Image (cartoon, rainbow, N blue to C red; front, side, top):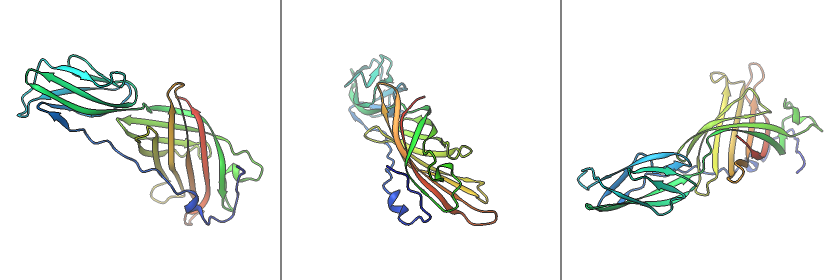
Length: 247
């Protein structure tokens, strides 16, 4: 798609609409005559959590036999230590002479780490005073991105640095969706007390290629700047696409 450079920003709300809504996975209730509990019922691949079994009165149960509906997703040791494998959903069951119980659990893809790679900008809208190098007619619109993610279960935080704004690490918050895609967004004001620049990352969506350990996806980069003593004005808007980010 050719680059679009314009002096006005009419219609940008439509261009950048359609963000994904983040979701969270609540703790799953235990079912059966025994109560099966854990600190977190959603894990990222590779994480572990301890399962505990009690009676309805809260008395600990020993001599438990554990089973998993899919050990490739989540396996459980004889001591109740659950280890996450691949992304998916399972039911973990516990049985003893006191009765039985089960708990539903989820494993999500492992996004944690620092991912880097190239990006393309198929769509760009610039103001008349935009300072970005790709706003010059005929300039290259490619770049690089560094995406750092910290993950607890299906909850994500992190930062993104786009080579168009190398001094602006944008803080991000998001989650792993039901289709295993990661969605994040965030904004950085510099400085926060009297901003001369605002850099926003919107509608970031990344999907994994588990076989080769890479990420592909897209996001929107929205940048506002203020002249000395002036108010923030729209500088440029860019749609960025990435393939095969590696950590």
